[in-house]
Image 1: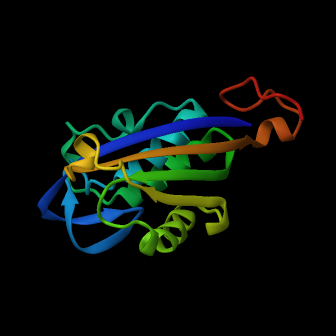
Image 2 (image 1 turned 90 degrees about the horizontal axis):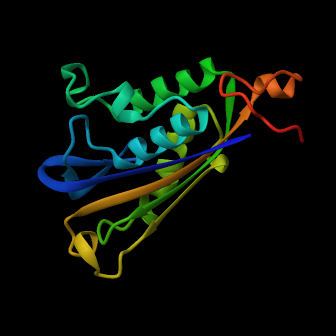
Length: 174
């Protein structure tokens, strides 16, 4: 088993639609970013890649590369899932915390869980997603943007077969 932690943050941008966890949230400013700015997807990508020992979102999808300009972050997530799969890992679960004053996350959490699970090839029950405020403190509390924390747990398919623990090595026997 391997654990990865992901983080992302973006400022709000009134000229863009708000997309979080692959779900468009109406009547709210979107997020800045080279891609579509989906900070939930980016944090999950970093958690998955970190757990697999495969770098980070910026390494695989650099903001200096025009190919990723305005990219759908669900496609980036799907590519990250393939990288994880190529390293002989299965996704066990993902836990996500979205920190913002607005929008309220709870009304959209189930749709995000379903969409993230669909793209990662896991059930929505293996995806936890919740919103928290920053209690009015700092740039998030001032309503300037959002921050997202994510944790992913992977299981090595190689270790389960008695192997060395996958490309990352070092899996512990259970």
